[in-house]
Length: 91
Image (cartoon, rainbow, N blue to C red; front, side, top):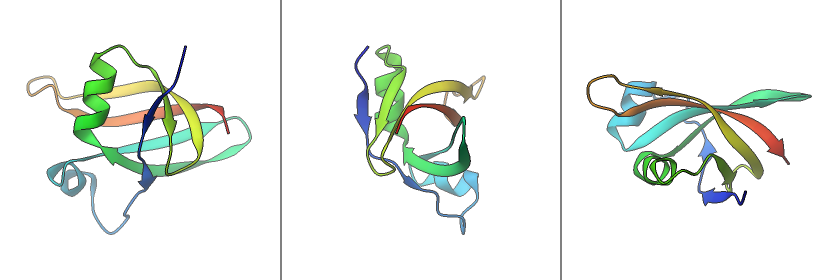
């Protein structure tokens, strides 16, 4: 399966997750074997569109890793992506 490229950045810790979502970003976490968990943020619309098209593996270009969307938290009413946990597949 090919990885879908999406621009991700280290998370702005001065803003809480609600503020990030209001700014059009989705908070996320990257974790995996032998790496420290890292908080990141990514464009909400781009991630949602890619995920709805069936993409599960993402190349997180701003962070330099390829990871699988392991767990996705979705709001039950609005269907907004609230949080994503990525499991690193390659660095």
